[in-house]
Figure 1 (cartoon, rainbow, N blue to C red):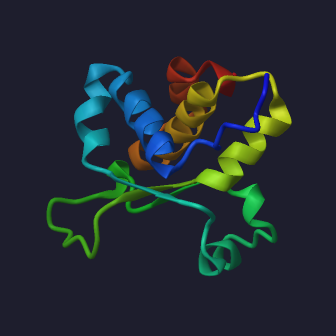
Figure 2: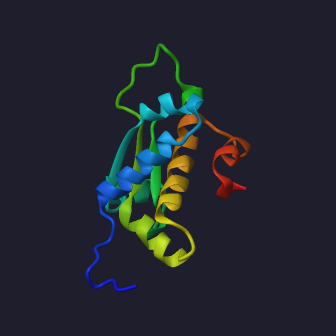
Length: 134
């Protein structure tokens, strides 16, 4: 394949793939998943990396920032919305390094992993939605 006339998928494409993965979730989860704000950035911020004790921005493809539904109370006042951050360059780097998976599948995998934090899912719960987990 000739790549000289092609550009890497941009943030809008990663977002489109992530939203498609969200819409493919079982109906019981879709409504709550839609309430999570999705943000696509090139890389995680230095602050995020420091907080997670990660040295290279290429090692973090996604991050959930919020309070899991299993820990929320109706009396809690949300300081900010629950968010999922996807990091385009880390995702693309993993996609190229793997060489054996479609980009849409990789983005869906990262999205499900981050949604797992939001829903408070166990490993067994994740495995029913994401076959990579098993």
